[in-house]
Amino acid sequence: MFKKTPKRDLEPPPIASSNSQAVEILRVWAAPGQPQQLTLRTTWKDAGAWGLLLADIARHAANAYANEGQNSAEVLARTQQLLNAEFSQPTDKPVQLG
Image (cartoon, rainbow, N blue to C red; front, side, top):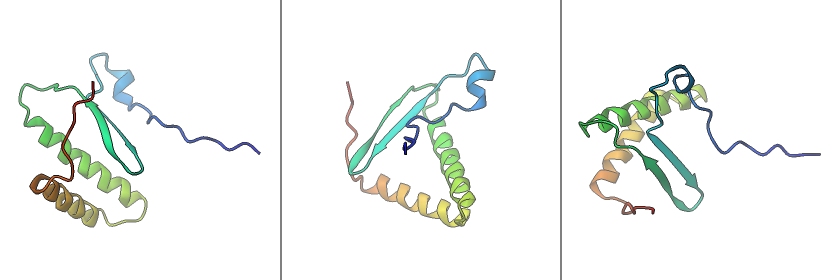
C-alpha cells in the first residue's frame, strides 16, 4: 500500500558520535544524467593527504562491491583505470558552487 522512500543521506559512521573532534570532510551527491556535486573541507596542511583518502575510498568501494558478489581486485583495477583516465582527460571541469 505505502512505498517506503529510500533514505537520501547515509548514516554517519561510529566515529561521528564517539569522538568529539571528528568532523565531516567530504560529502558527494549524484543524480542520473548530471555531474556529481560535492562539498569538502581542506582539513590537512599537506594536500597530498587527499591522495591517501582517495585510495582508501577506492578500497572501501571495492570491498562494498565484493560484498555484492564482484571481485574486489577487478573492481579496484577498474576504479584505478578510470581515475587515471579522468586525470589524463577530464570529462568535465569542476565548478565552484556558491
